[in-house]
Image (cartoon, rainbow, N blue to C red; front, side, top):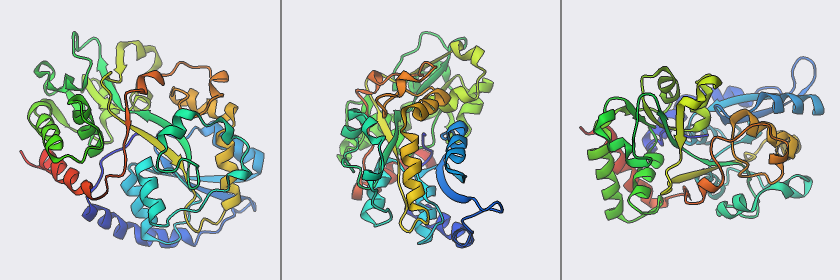
Length: 357
């Protein structure tokens, strides 16, 4: 899910230093608990792991799954980078970070011949996984996008586009995520440009749009508290992920919220399941990845978070809920890619937006 603020290189180093000692002790953990059960160490996003699937996997294989959570790709990457043996068996990076981790030799190759449920991966997900189209190092987990949530009782007759954040009627009642690629990607898409542009002039236009038109109307950029604050009514308009927004709102009040993906497109993410280099429970990790994509199990993920079946072809047959948005609404959305050396340009633009008044 969704994904809080990309940090600068300096911030990543700071996080790495603070986590190094923790990882050293983590890597020394025993792989069995007091009952003698084998453990599988999983590192995933918050709001992103259905308990029912984890529990059924534990019962079927007689193991214990130990879950840790991260709030950003940068946090996950820093932890793994700080130690050659992080102790994790499965991690869930986004596509651009899969590219980085592949290039840096941080991932094990995946033996797909040991998995029978990968036949259910959608063509849509395969087409978008340009960083690893043959699933040599990663298996798609979920593909989605952030959108906009509006309290319909409080905000009326609004523009259903990213430019809603320019509406001065809602000044001091709006929030955008504290996420460089998401916010700049929204602005780039609204202006008709690629969310991965390396054109400095186009990026400068996006920066000006956010800095001069959107930011003045925001309470703040908020990576973690946007959903709770929206649910409480503090924010009338919130940029964010549907699963986070609706997690905080009683289901009987869902009809009072208009959640939409702007038709003009925007940044899209794909999160994948990967096995870190040196994982101690490689074979069990393969079983877990395959287990997730058994359609009956994947349907539980869809039901838990009201996701569209963007990655698994058969899961819709078993789901019992209506998704918050559809695969068709994602057609105009563009996967965030590794920016390479152009990341510096984005960081500079974002720092001016975030920290210069």
